[in-house]
Length: 213
Image: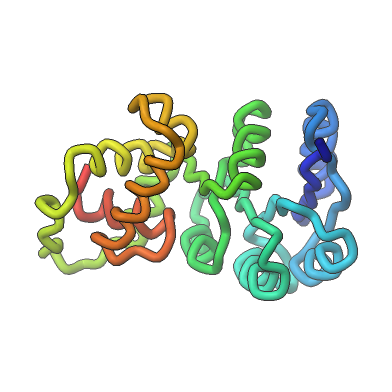
């Protein structure tokens, strides 16, 4: 089985090198390049065709939000995970809307990071539970009246949605609920339809914002 090809984008050399060194210890992951800003990231993705990009947000020149949007537009087979310290970071939610498959804290456990990369490559989205609430708080509409969607979700759909909010992958949700991954995917599709969500990230935001879990 071919390793998952990864590009690391961060304006801090020590962080790039540190991540590369950690990921080099994981047999099924391969770092194929590094870049220090969004513009260089686009050139790197065009040249190396990585499977997953680990993207910083705040960088000189083209920031991570714009770079994420452009990568997803030009190279739809490449997925993006945003890595952030989050503190005073105004760009995280914007990057998710731009097409990132998830976000993690830069101090995430290496095993968790590796698992997130595998999950994203497999088509899942990863939302770090440590910062989900903070991201949602920044996106919450000031209108106190929430849509009455609670009754539209079945108990099982609410369980699946709760797993999504907690950052669990489809496989983890399936194991937890004793379901097949295909059944979990079907539930998620129904959840998207009922919430009017177009992505896992949006569904999670709405779930927390509207108190559905």
